[in-house]
Structures are given as structure tokens and as C-alpha cells.
Image (cartoon, rainbow, N blue to C red; front, side):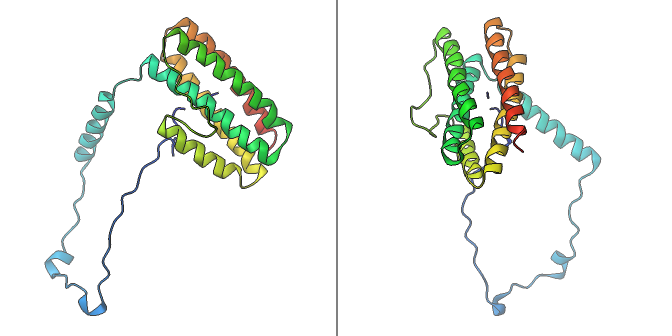
Length: 206
């Protein structure tokens, strides 16, 4: 199975840190006076030309972002497979049931498949041996969020399974389309097929 991207808050994926803001509270006698000119000043209105220019500038910034390398892709994928394995490990312990147990076993095999690709490319395995610990900060944040959601009820746990597998399918498809390496494509297509089966299994529980 597999990130992108998620979410995202993809997705989650895309999580933002909040800086602290100190706000002073004035007493009723200290309310600042607003001058008539300031209160009646018209807000700035963007014209269509302004909006087009902003869109073009945004697109230019996105285009300047470097495309992920094959190394980046593989390092991300193996930790994404670990994320599925670790989440299902925790939820299986909490809720039991054959669905999590059976899929959990598959996730170990999936990691081994990606590990074979890492070895072929001479890449060091980034995975921690500890459950729920990740090198990639986005995957770490996603793991924490998904476990918290899945622990609230068994139904939410199955929803987490659906989300993980849907995300994997999307990420694997994107990865397949981004490479011409036949060996990588073959492995990722097998992982995507497995994720589709896992998605169907979780969906039946909802």
C-alpha cells in the first residue's frame, strides 16, 4: 500500500505548524478611536487581471519545485507501507477481527518488496524498528492522526483503513506514471492491486 500525499491535511499530508500569537486585551476605557477616514476607506478590490497575474505567479512557483527523484520515491514508499502496517497493528490490538489481522500480514510482505528495490538502488532502509516511529515528518503526523481517529470506535478504525488504502492507490498510481523503470513499475502494480483488494475488504465493513 502507499503517500503521497496525503491529505492532506493530504491532504494531511499537508500539516501546518502554528506559531504563538500574543494578544493584549484593552479595557473599555482604552478602546482606540478610529478616524472617519480610516473607517470609510474602501477595501482593495482585485481585478480579473490581478487575479490572473497571481495565478500565473503561483503556477510558476509550483513549476519551479523539483520533481521527486527515484530515490525519494522509494524511500517514501517503504515508510508509507510501514505506516499501514503500524496503524493496522495498533487497531488490530484494539478492536480485533480478521480484517486487520489478515491485511496486516500483507503489509509486511509489501515492505519486503519495496526493500528489494531499495537494495537494488543502493539505498539505506530509512525505517525505524519501533512501531509508530517514522523518518518522514509528514508520515509521522499522518500516523498520529490516523491512530487517534481509529481508536475512537471500530467503525472509525475501518474508515481509517479505507483512507489508507485509497491514499496508497493514488500515490502508487502517481509513482507508476512518474517512472519508466520496468522493475519498479512491476512491483508498484502488484502493490496497487493488493491495496485495491484491501480497500474492498475495509469498505465491506462500513
